[in-house]
Image 1 (spheres, rainbow, N blue to C red):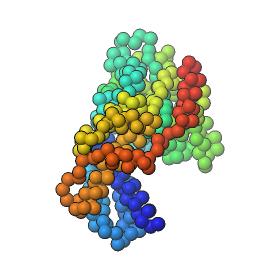
Image 2: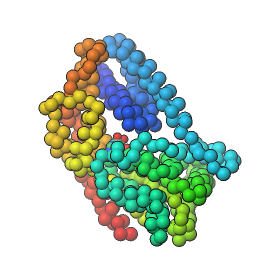
Image 3: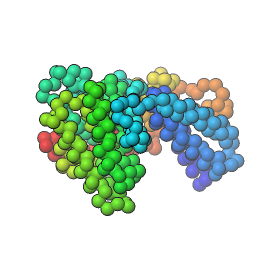
Image 4: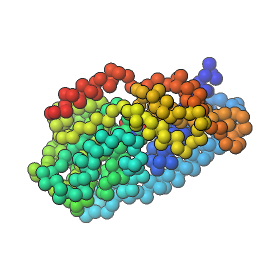
Length: 381
Ligand SMILES: Nc1ncnc2c1ncn2[C@@H]1O[C@H](COP(=O)(O)OP(=O)(O)O)[C@@H](O)[C@H]1O
Ligand SMILES: [Mg+2]
């Protein structure tokens, strides 16, 4: 039994590690840090639980390397600065903590596999208006809602928008609004918007990205009705952005959710543009496979076309994880055979087949149906 959980933990650590390295390579440093940390945590756990395990020395080396890389990346991220503005320091100090402005996003649309419809939709509602506002005398949508099953690229695409628009991209985690700002949440929402308006008034586009926006609707435990106040403040701020009142303002609120049905109608109405990010199509799966195997060695027998067929029903995140897991098999073998000396063998079709034995699609049909029904209902609102 204990060897099962050791195998499990090792698999977990490897998954995190590969994920970290891939995010790192993509320039997605925040994710890389998170995954390196998780890998470290699991490796430490292994060493602690199985002190006699033969690979512990290697794991210690890895922990050291990951720690070093985390420190480096933190240094890099620390340099992404909040741009100076006329705003005065008083209200800025505590806003800094959630006002993460990304000025050079490492991701842009060229790193987003396929998904042309989604890209076009975003181009028309955000990118073109922010580049040529003069071409949009009737205004542009201020609220854009991305919704769809988990792991299909909502957060990823939003980060790519940051790389496409030459402006400020403010990433706000809705859950952290609710937990960290107890009692003050609605004031913070107001300040977030006022700061964003101030930046936008200088003529620079500003995108506020609110990930997991449904958590604004989750009741928080220690304050009765707090979420209603936050939500109302939010609605008020959104109304203030209406193009009737501020026709030229290049301020966009992009929100993402896996649970659109948690949002109420008043809220949904403020988001004039609703974009469905569905499960990846065959084309997208193929492109994802190409993208994520590009830096790996593949056996000539591997058919990405065939894999794209087999992976019907899997999310983008599943596809990426399957590639990583197949690669891990070769890395694991290298460590078992030669203690990590030399290069891993090429990944074979069999590696993929083995991985797929244990991985079923993470999203089921009923859930997909729920998104489609929701979309049907609110498409024409
Ligand atoms: N179109 C895409 N192109 C490249 N990678 C993608 C794409 N969609 C998803 N991914 C990968 O899948 C991972 C999960 O996507 P994510 O944006 O976090 O999903 P969501 O926010 O919808 O839950 C991303 O970190 C990225 O590595
Ligand atoms: Mg997400």
